[in-house]
Image (cartoon, rainbow, N blue to C red; front, side, top):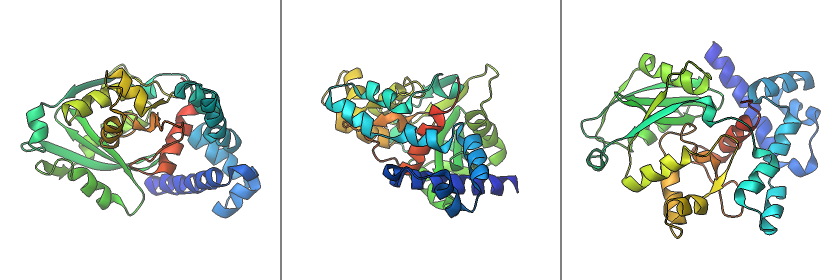
Length: 280
């Protein structure tokens, strides 16, 4: 029942987010946001603030990109533009201490052959989360809306078609709890990166982007010593299998706009706003 309640809350918040992001020029009132989701103004204010850590009005400000684009036209950096547009927030990556290791290139080329992966579905602030773990740690994290669980599972299994998969929510639950439960016990969240050498280098770079910050594909390419490889970087970012933890949502297009996200642009906006509203 708690699972269903959380999903219902997310569905309402998601609908409000879509309203805000599509009609921000009209500056919709709290009443205009609350009415379509069947809530009173007070109910929406409390639900949204509990979920995101800030009010609908503050969230709208956090998602406004026009100012960022204007700054970019004045030759501000992607990072400065994103910060000045309200996407900033203190603290490091989800307040998590992450320890990671990469699978060997041979294991990647074998497309998971000989690899045992447990998976489970869990509630999260951004819909249903699919967590996948190996003996070495979390290797996959994706999102689905209610009814889309099997499609999300097939999408992830396709990445390592030769691996052995088994549903084991009891094994994946501690990882989901650490990612979304803000657990601070000094223990690292262990993740396993399975990809090509270049993809892993890109994903490791993503781990260095602090919460509330944003960079462009070009910025990442330059940091890797390959300034002309922005397109290849974009492809690697798009293949990131550990969403949210390896923060591909913090990458913007060269214009400063939020670009596509494998798990939905609305969800990307939601994650950025959620991070912006969280204290350190």
